[in-house]
Amino acid sequence: MPFSAFIVDDEPMARGNLIEALRPHTRWADLRDFKSGAGLVDAVVRHRPDVVFLDIQMPGDDGVTLARSLLELCCAPLLVFVTAHSEYAVEAFELYAIDYLLKPFNDTRIAQCITKLEHALDNQSAYDSARATQTAWARETPLDRLVIKSSTSVRFIDVDHIHWIAANGNYVDIHHSEGRHLLRASLKHVLSRLPERDFLQLHRGFVARVDLIREVKASDGERSTALLASGEQLPVGKSYRNALLKRLCR
Image 1 (cartoon, rainbow, N blue to C red):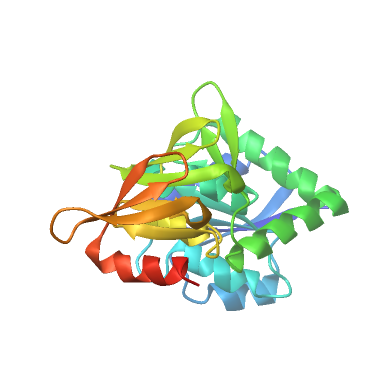
Image 2 (tube, one colour):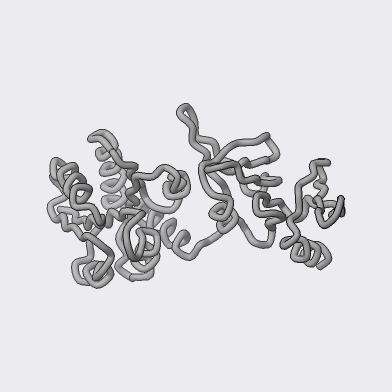
Protein backbone atom coordinates (compact mmCIF):
# COMPACT_ATOMS: atom_id res chain seq x y z
CA MET A 1 0.00 0.00 0.00
CA PRO A 2 1.52 3.38 -0.99
CA PHE A 3 2.21 6.00 1.64
CA SER A 4 1.66 9.76 1.38
CA ALA A 5 3.62 12.70 2.78
CA PHE A 6 3.34 16.47 2.99
CA ILE A 7 6.53 18.54 2.94
CA VAL A 8 6.23 21.96 4.60
CA ASP A 9 9.12 24.39 4.15
CA ASP A 10 9.29 28.05 3.15
CA GLU A 11 12.37 27.42 0.96
CA PRO A 12 11.56 26.00 -2.52
CA MET A 13 14.97 24.37 -2.85
CA ALA A 14 14.59 22.65 0.51
CA ARG A 15 11.19 21.27 -0.48
CA GLY A 16 12.56 20.09 -3.80
CA ASN A 17 15.58 18.42 -2.21
CA LEU A 18 13.42 16.46 0.20
CA ILE A 19 11.00 15.37 -2.52
CA GLU A 20 13.89 14.17 -4.70
CA ALA A 21 15.38 12.31 -1.74
CA LEU A 22 12.06 10.52 -1.13
CA ARG A 23 11.34 9.56 -4.74
CA PRO A 24 13.64 6.49 -4.87
CA HIS A 25 11.62 4.98 -2.01
CA THR A 26 8.88 3.44 -4.13
CA ARG A 27 6.26 3.08 -1.40
CA TRP A 28 6.03 6.89 -1.14
CA ALA A 29 3.90 7.64 -4.16
CA ASP A 30 1.95 10.72 -3.05
CA LEU A 31 4.21 13.67 -2.17
CA ARG A 32 2.83 17.21 -1.83
CA ASP A 33 4.65 20.33 -0.77
CA PHE A 34 3.57 23.53 1.02
CA LYS A 35 5.51 26.79 1.33
CA SER A 36 3.88 27.67 4.67
CA GLY A 37 1.40 26.44 7.24
CA ALA A 38 -1.46 28.37 5.64
CA GLY A 39 -4.21 25.87 4.85
CA LEU A 40 -2.13 22.95 6.10
CA VAL A 41 -4.59 21.74 8.73
CA ASP A 42 -7.48 21.74 6.25
CA ALA A 43 -5.33 19.89 3.71
CA VAL A 44 -4.42 17.24 6.28
CA VAL A 45 -8.11 16.74 7.13
CA ARG A 46 -9.00 16.39 3.43
CA HIS A 47 -6.13 14.20 2.25
CA ARG A 48 -5.02 12.45 5.46
CA PRO A 49 -1.30 12.07 4.72
CA ASP A 50 0.60 9.39 6.60
CA VAL A 51 3.47 11.75 7.46
CA VAL A 52 4.15 15.49 7.54
CA PHE A 53 7.73 16.75 7.26
CA LEU A 54 7.79 20.10 9.08
CA ASP A 55 10.50 22.72 8.87
CA ILE A 56 11.06 24.22 12.32
CA GLN A 57 11.83 27.82 11.41
CA MET A 58 9.36 29.46 9.00
CA PRO A 59 7.65 32.86 8.74
CA GLY A 60 4.30 32.90 10.48
CA ASP A 61 3.52 29.74 12.42
CA ASP A 62 6.70 27.76 12.98
CA GLY A 63 6.89 23.99 12.75
CA VAL A 64 6.37 23.42 16.47
CA THR A 65 3.19 25.53 16.52
CA LEU A 66 1.88 23.77 13.42
CA ALA A 67 2.69 20.39 14.94
CA ARG A 68 0.52 21.10 17.97
CA SER A 69 -2.39 22.06 15.70
CA LEU A 70 -2.01 18.87 13.67
CA LEU A 71 -1.81 16.64 16.72
CA GLU A 72 -5.20 17.88 17.90
CA LEU A 73 -6.78 16.23 14.84
CA CYS A 74 -8.32 12.78 15.03
CA CYS A 75 -6.47 12.00 11.77
CA ALA A 76 -3.14 13.37 13.02
CA PRO A 77 -0.21 12.22 10.85
CA LEU A 78 3.19 11.08 12.03
CA LEU A 79 5.62 14.00 12.23
CA VAL A 80 9.22 14.46 11.18
CA PHE A 81 10.87 17.74 12.15
CA VAL A 82 13.32 19.28 9.69
CA THR A 83 15.84 21.93 10.74
CA ALA A 84 19.09 23.51 9.60
CA HIS A 85 19.86 24.75 13.10
CA SER A 86 21.39 22.41 15.66
CA GLU A 87 20.66 24.96 18.40
CA TYR A 88 17.02 23.86 18.27
CA ALA A 89 17.96 21.06 20.67
CA VAL A 90 17.66 18.13 18.30
CA GLU A 91 17.69 15.76 21.27
CA ALA A 92 14.32 17.10 22.40
CA PHE A 93 12.78 16.82 18.93
CA GLU A 94 14.00 13.24 18.72
CA LEU A 95 12.03 12.42 21.85
CA TYR A 96 8.76 14.03 20.76
CA ALA A 97 8.50 13.34 17.04
CA ILE A 98 9.02 10.03 15.31
CA ASP A 99 12.21 11.43 13.76
CA TYR A 100 14.08 14.59 12.77
CA LEU A 101 16.24 15.56 9.79
CA LEU A 102 19.12 17.97 10.28
CA LYS A 103 19.92 19.83 7.05
CA PRO A 104 21.89 19.07 4.98
CA PHE A 105 20.95 15.40 5.13
CA ASN A 106 22.27 12.63 2.88
CA ASP A 107 20.72 9.54 1.30
CA THR A 108 21.75 7.34 4.22
CA ARG A 109 20.00 9.58 6.74
CA ILE A 110 16.83 9.71 4.60
CA ALA A 111 16.86 5.91 4.32
CA GLN A 112 17.07 5.60 8.12
CA CYS A 113 14.11 7.96 8.50
CA ILE A 114 12.03 6.10 5.90
CA THR A 115 12.78 2.76 7.56
CA LYS A 116 11.53 4.11 10.87
CA LEU A 117 8.38 5.56 9.27
CA GLU A 118 7.54 2.41 7.31
CA HIS A 119 8.04 0.27 10.40
CA ALA A 120 5.53 2.38 12.31
CA LEU A 121 3.04 2.49 9.44
CA ASP A 122 3.29 -1.28 8.81
CA ASN A 123 3.00 -2.26 12.48
CA GLN A 124 -0.01 -1.15 14.49
CA SER A 125 1.71 -1.37 17.87
CA ALA A 126 4.67 0.73 16.66
CA TYR A 127 2.26 3.21 15.10
CA ASP A 128 0.19 3.51 18.27
CA SER A 129 3.35 4.06 20.31
CA ALA A 130 4.59 6.80 17.98
CA ARG A 131 1.21 8.54 18.02
CA ALA A 132 0.98 8.35 21.83
CA THR A 133 4.46 9.89 22.20
CA GLN A 134 3.60 12.72 19.83
CA THR A 135 0.31 13.42 21.62
CA ALA A 136 2.07 13.59 25.00
CA TRP A 137 4.52 16.10 23.57
CA ALA A 138 1.72 18.23 22.10
CA ARG A 139 0.14 18.45 25.55
CA GLU A 140 3.52 19.50 26.95
CA THR A 141 3.68 16.57 29.34
CA PRO A 142 6.74 17.04 31.57
CA LEU A 143 9.82 15.03 30.70
CA ASP A 144 10.85 12.07 32.82
CA ARG A 145 14.37 11.97 31.35
CA LEU A 146 16.80 14.00 29.27
CA VAL A 147 18.74 12.61 26.32
CA ILE A 148 22.30 13.83 25.83
CA LYS A 149 24.03 12.83 22.61
CA SER A 150 27.72 12.98 21.79
CA SER A 151 29.73 11.67 18.86
CA THR A 152 30.28 8.38 20.67
CA SER A 153 27.26 7.82 22.93
CA VAL A 154 23.71 8.62 23.95
CA ARG A 155 23.19 9.18 27.67
CA PHE A 156 19.86 9.17 29.49
CA ILE A 157 19.45 11.19 32.69
CA ASP A 158 16.37 10.64 34.83
CA VAL A 159 14.78 13.94 35.81
CA ASP A 160 14.48 12.63 39.38
CA HIS A 161 18.29 12.52 39.56
CA ILE A 162 18.85 16.15 38.54
CA HIS A 163 20.06 18.48 41.33
CA TRP A 164 20.47 21.79 39.54
CA ILE A 165 20.96 23.26 36.06
CA ALA A 166 22.96 26.29 34.93
CA ALA A 167 22.86 28.20 31.66
CA ASN A 168 26.16 27.95 29.78
CA GLY A 169 26.08 29.81 26.47
CA ASN A 170 24.10 27.76 23.95
CA TYR A 171 24.07 24.86 26.41
CA VAL A 172 22.80 24.01 29.86
CA ASP A 173 25.09 22.41 32.44
CA ILE A 174 23.14 19.62 34.13
CA HIS A 175 24.35 18.58 37.59
CA HIS A 176 22.90 15.24 38.65
CA SER A 177 23.52 12.35 41.02
CA GLU A 178 26.05 10.72 38.65
CA GLY A 179 28.00 13.83 37.69
CA ARG A 180 27.46 16.64 35.21
CA HIS A 181 26.75 16.85 31.48
CA LEU A 182 26.14 19.53 28.86
CA LEU A 183 22.96 19.59 26.78
CA ARG A 184 22.57 21.90 23.78
CA ALA A 185 19.36 23.70 24.73
CA SER A 186 18.22 26.89 26.44
CA LEU A 187 17.54 26.99 30.17
CA LYS A 188 14.04 28.32 29.43
CA HIS A 189 13.26 25.36 27.17
CA VAL A 190 14.51 22.75 29.64
CA LEU A 191 12.68 24.36 32.57
CA SER A 192 9.43 24.40 30.57
CA ARG A 193 9.65 20.60 30.24
CA LEU A 194 10.55 19.78 33.85
CA PRO A 195 7.85 18.95 36.45
CA GLU A 196 6.80 22.30 37.91
CA ARG A 197 6.26 20.78 41.35
CA ASP A 198 9.92 19.71 41.56
CA PHE A 199 11.98 22.55 40.06
CA LEU A 200 12.16 26.30 40.47
CA GLN A 201 14.20 29.06 38.86
CA LEU A 202 16.49 30.78 41.37
CA HIS A 203 18.22 33.17 39.00
CA ARG A 204 18.09 33.94 35.30
CA GLY A 205 20.90 31.42 34.85
CA PHE A 206 20.07 28.79 37.49
CA VAL A 207 17.34 26.24 38.22
CA ALA A 208 17.33 23.89 41.21
CA ARG A 209 15.39 20.99 42.61
CA VAL A 210 13.23 22.47 45.38
CA ASP A 211 13.49 19.59 47.86
CA LEU A 212 17.30 19.86 47.86
CA ILE A 213 17.34 23.50 49.05
CA ARG A 214 18.21 23.62 52.75
CA GLU A 215 18.67 27.34 53.36
CA VAL A 216 18.39 30.73 51.69
CA LYS A 217 21.09 33.07 52.97
CA ALA A 218 21.36 36.82 52.54
CA SER A 219 24.87 37.90 51.61
CA ASP A 220 26.09 41.44 51.02
CA GLY A 221 23.52 44.02 50.02
CA GLU A 222 20.53 42.55 48.17
CA ARG A 223 22.24 39.36 47.02
CA SER A 224 21.17 35.95 48.29
CA THR A 225 22.35 32.37 47.89
CA ALA A 226 20.59 29.02 48.14
CA LEU A 227 22.40 26.31 50.08
CA LEU A 228 21.76 22.79 48.74
CA ALA A 229 21.87 19.51 50.64
CA SER A 230 25.20 18.79 48.91
CA GLY A 231 26.73 21.96 50.38
CA GLU A 232 26.78 23.70 47.00
CA GLN A 233 25.64 27.33 46.88
CA LEU A 234 23.71 28.87 44.00
CA PRO A 235 22.91 32.55 43.46
CA VAL A 236 19.34 33.72 43.99
CA GLY A 237 18.24 36.64 41.85
CA LYS A 238 16.40 39.50 43.50
CA SER A 239 13.33 39.04 41.30
CA TYR A 240 13.17 35.30 42.12
CA ARG A 241 13.75 35.45 45.90
CA ASN A 242 10.16 36.02 47.06
CA ALA A 243 8.79 33.20 44.89
CA LEU A 244 11.48 30.88 46.23
CA LEU A 245 10.77 31.73 49.89
CA LYS A 246 7.02 31.37 49.33
CA ARG A 247 7.54 27.96 47.76
CA LEU A 248 9.81 26.77 50.55
CA CYS A 249 7.43 27.95 53.28
CA ARG A 250 4.42 26.03 52.02
